[in-house]
Image (cartoon, rainbow, N blue to C red; front, side):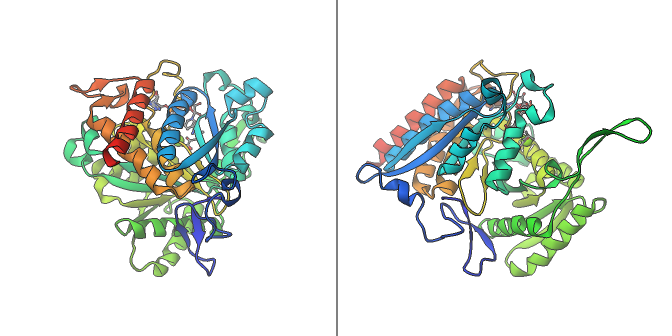
Length: 406
Ligand SMILES: NC(=O)C1=CN([C@@H]2O[C@H](COP(=O)(O)OP(=O)(O)OC[C@H]3O[C@@H](n4cnc5c(N)ncnc54)[C@H](O)[C@@H]3O)[C@@H](O)[C@H]2O)C=CC1
Ligand SMILES: CC(C)CC(=O)C(=O)O
Ligand SMILES: [Mg+2]
């Protein structure tokens, strides 16, 4: 249940609608499971997949914030924590155990930390932790990855760009998540006819895969500032030529959205030159992966950017855009705000609980207003805190908002 993408009655355009199911748009999230909740409470099952490196650190903090914000809005969560990635490899020898996938699939929403680490870097490909992420995305069919990148006024000085370039940036990157070169066949490493080793992957997109992500992007742009930039490499790649053709063909259905196209190399440059020109960006899997890491630094840190991965039905997958950061893992240095904000996206897009989501967003802003900063977003004059203390401060802010509004 509780996916965030919905078709209209013609089963045609896919809208980003918080907390609704494609197959039964009128159904409230979690109807069956809610029956067991305390009187006056709604109950949701949340799968927690902490993963590796800083994953468990940021998930433990975000879980507390999610629980508290939810409980203030009459929500009860039943958390089920399951191993994925390196943690699962160490426990049972596979990156995504069946039990972990089943728990995720049966949940109302999934909150994931991050996957991967030096320890498993030389594993054979099918035994690499990152495969868990790819299996989850593919088998949950969460093709639409929303990656908002907003420069908060409190963090303009943390941006690596000049104040006048960074200030006011507010964009949404809509990344296709279950196709393209990360999934395309054929791929592999083999020995060619000359006896030389060759490695190869395939950038592959079917028309329906392009159309469905383009519709999500048009709908997203329509609810924002009405500007959509489709990023491709149509001067070179056949898959991009088809991408551009399909996106262009859909534009007539969205006359209120201004569509432009940009080659990815130019887009990478324009993001640094003048990021405010972008409202909504739609792009393929690999370009979206790279451009969103780039966009994160405009906002101050990769530790700030959340994401929502959504399909037409089934639970959404919510995770920070960063990885497992093995260089700072176990040192209480990780910025948990990307994961906390992913929990807010879980409430909004996954469960349709916008009030609880707003509580979290407000609490994050309040905490930043009070000057608390992890090392990655620190600037002189602020208070340097670790991951745990940042989480505790956000929790206090969630609570204090309640006192203020009661
Ligand atoms: N979604 C996922 O689970 C992802 C997993 N990975 C995996 O993570 C591992 C490390 O990959 P990297 O390329 O180093 O990317 P990374 O995103 O883990 O780290 C890049 C840099 O950003 C810093 N950083 C990341 N998150 C931070 C946070 N919350 N607070 C403060 N600093 C933060 C790290 O310390 C590091 O210097 C690899 O095994 C990779 O495959 C990478 C990207 C996404
Ligand atoms: C394991 C990675 C390819 C995942 C990643 O970098 C991402 O999805 O942002
Ligand atoms: Mg990435």
